[in-house]
Length: 243
Image (cartoon, rainbow, N blue to C red; front, side, top):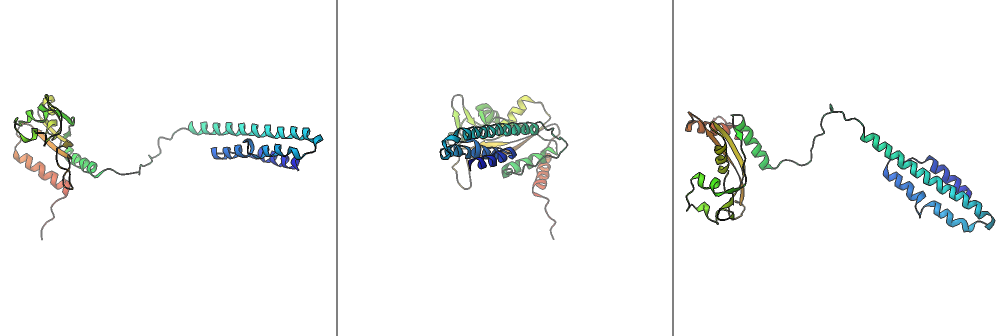
């Protein structure tokens, strides 16, 4: 009975193939683990006649060694397959796999559209810190010392004397641009700004602002008007003809 089972298991072990870690683990659980079929056969030795137990024990040990050798062979085969797969050359001519997970936030989409429109008429993009000092956020922009924006109820101050605050507008970026560059200047300053507002369905303490700065010779209010008209038509679409 046991000999027949041993021969059956030997054939199964010899022909076993494991192409995945899961299949390898299934082999280990069935043949190698303490709760596998081979330990069960060792437990059945007590049913063998005393004079035949030694011979049957040798047979079972041979089966156990065969199972362990096959397990080691399967591990080596899987590792080699994994290495070959990892070393396979990458075809750089293949098209990229599109990332279809998620989407851009509406604010990011809107900001990108605004920037693209102004870039088409020669504006570049300037950015600056969201934590600003008094000079760039107030003084350089001619905010008098008694201006309401300088009060705690209107501005998020981080430090006092010297005053450091979360910027209340992106005009501070314009100041920094004019400190570092000489005219002509044609730049756009998009970004987050912060005001100490009561949060409601209509207002928030964080909002987004886009400012433009155009400094050059022979620039007039007519240029401002045409720039804003161009932007409005590009962003919202042309006004349909009446009638």
